Amino acid sequence: MAENQARQFLKQIPGVDAVLQMQVVREALSRYPRSIVLDAIREELDTIRKNILQRAPFSLDPENIALCVAQRAQRLAAFALQPVVNATGIVIHTNLGRSLLAEEAIARLQIICRGYNNLEYDLQKGERGSRYVHAEAILCELTGAEAALVVNNNAGAVFLALNTLAAGREVVVSRGQLVEIGGSFRIPDVMAASGAILREVGTTNRTHLRDYVSAITDQTAMLMKVHTSNFQIVGFTAEVCLEELAALGKERGLPVVEDLGSGCFIDLSPFGLRAEKTVRDTVRAGADLVTFSGDKLLGGPQAGILAGTKELIEKCKKNPITRAFRVDKMTLAVLESTLRLYRDERQAIEKIPTLRMIAVSADELKRRASLLAQALRQADPGNLLCIEVQTGSSQVGGGSLPAQDLPTFLVTLRSGKLSANRIEEFLRRNEPPIIGRIESNHFIMDVRTLAPEQTETITAALRRLIETL
Image (cartoon, one colour):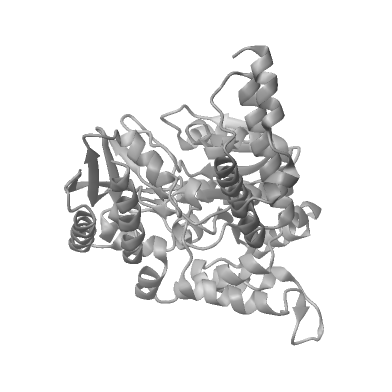
């Protein structure tokens, strides 16, 4: 394109006021704030201008400009945080919001947030109270701990425990437990930031009680165990059990703290998973303080929980930095409601989505997969897609129960005209987005993490996909 021709095209770009008068844009003004539509117009005109100067494809057709502006306005007005359909089979999917909340917890959240509440008001005494009491009683009941404290996430719980009990002094940890989880959360880094001094003992694969004994000095403040939440060390291994470490701590007058990561309240081994130590088991085994997450396997909101002796919890509560980690009324409302479900284990499995998805039977998964595949085939009468039901595996996810898979049933899509990557992109751009995975040029949907009512959403998206073929 010659320079003179480019200048001529630039002169033909309509002004903002002219675009505002286009019918499609006027309709957009009735749906979106004027500021949003104006931003969309300016962005679209800037794009046209850049494409002309860079000799890239462009259109000056008024109808096309108006349509592009309306589409931009829709994107600009959309919520950043959106619901998605999780077809990955990863139950606790960190990127997709982790644990789903029980209906009872959602209902309680609405009740508490709709009006005022006694977040920091003691109804018995008629005076200012503490927000930390609201979930403490039920946590003590379920864990057997003397006291408990809820903060905003488990990283905060670990940091608070270290800063309160060991700032400026040494914390003894097995080298094989110096974990790093998603988001670059690394135990050595958190410990350094808290002011505690890391004292590694043992080797990556084997640590013995004598390693802890030889590491204890007058600078030692704490003995610590950390759950290896996202990896396993197998083969020639050895680690010190909590009971032995607790006995050593009691003998030397040192608190023993265990970070469980994803706290588990019930035995999940009946559902095909390796037996995981529960929070109550950990308290009973002698830990003076236990930290764990409020979401993940517990199935509540994102939160960090400290449970242990009254003396240590009180010290943590009095630490000025606790205010930086404090939780709000929404977290406390959801957490307390979720915890109450654990008073009946069968009720917890039935009503807490994370547990329900883990516990669902193979027969039920097969039935769901068959129904989904049938609905998708009906939406594709021309058999343009190959739709099959296959066996596969799901993951618990969220840094919980590493290297453990759950058998499941999958619905797979394959097209001779579209690659699996193109199918994945189309469904990911659907409204709502449908997130699956790709294996061997098949788009895979795992029914374990799909709700039955999402079948129509997926079917409607498939119809739109078929229209492109």
